[in-house]
Length: 238
Ligand SMILES: NC(=O)c1ccc[n+]([C@@H]2O[C@H](COP(=O)([O-])OP(=O)(O)OC[C@H]3O[C@@H](n4cnc5c(N)ncnc54)[C@H](OP(=O)(O)O)[C@@H]3O)[C@@H](O)[C@H]2O)c1
Image (cartoon, rainbow, N blue to C red):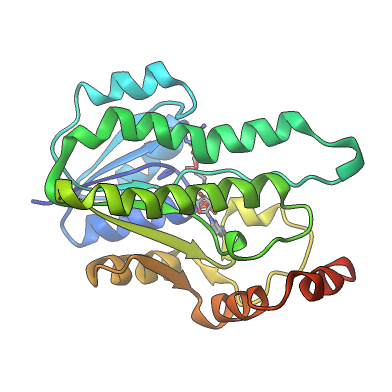
């Protein structure tokens, strides 16, 4: 039986991914902070085990490591988003929280868990299409995801000699509790179940980058090709 460990599996994309791999017959280690929500995910499943801990707590991340089985796949999916609403009164606390949750915690996980990966295994980073283009109010979230993608690409080179593959997932808008807080239009939104299917298909094909929905991420990549001065003028009017 193959084993996957998924962070942020108590909700949204991670929960849908956990349920998807459970249905495919994998042993799933579902991580999150909220034990009650993790138990709900596990209760409707065959082989989901739950691990409740805070990823931003280095000690808790290390403690989890002592009981881990050998992993075929490790999915760094947990994340949070906060917007910088007033750039002139820069919210350094939110910036720190988002970088800590979306980026630094991943380093804790890599340090503690990479040694449990089977040869031929895959490490997956759930980044965001937001990393493709500078967006208004996304100073914290966008920076965390751009750095996460860079981390993933760099690791993809360095882990090759250790027999490990890396995939970077860059979703557009997915309807989850994270995006339910957004107060702006979110075009081409997909459900978390649709997102899980796109991700699992891409991973099965061994893709380095998994971008979806393709029409949305194509548009983002097209806009990213514009000279920054042109995109800046457009974005200021948004
Ligand atoms: N939804 C979108 O449109 C979208 C688009 C692009 C990228 N993404 C990325 O996809 C990932 C999943 O997002 P989502 O939309 O599914 O969000 P979500 O429904 O809010 O789920 C976030 C998950 O992360 C976990 N988490 C957050 N902080 C944590 C911490 N300190 N320690 C442990 N677990 C923590 C939460 O667990 P607890 O609540 O149990 O603590 C929860 O399971 C994120 O990395 C997000 O940036 C989402």
